[in-house]
Picture 1 (cartoon, rainbow, N blue to C red):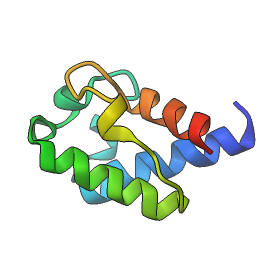
Picture 2: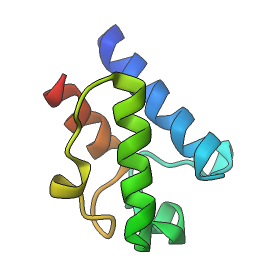
Picture 3: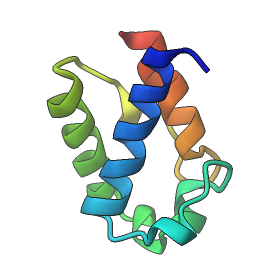
Length: 85
């Protein structure tokens, strides 16, 4: 994994653990967001995630338009961020 990709992945994982209270041992790159934490069924949490990511990367990252919490995983979010940067 390229260093830039690893930094994005580490940042995304940190956001999930710190702001959505997902225990590190329960974090899974391959689980859809709704399986990772049931609160992602609430649109406000995806909006909050988008805001946190935009603040962290100082870039507009269109999560709402491109992510379905029922299907997409943290790994998909990392790919989206990499493609937008």
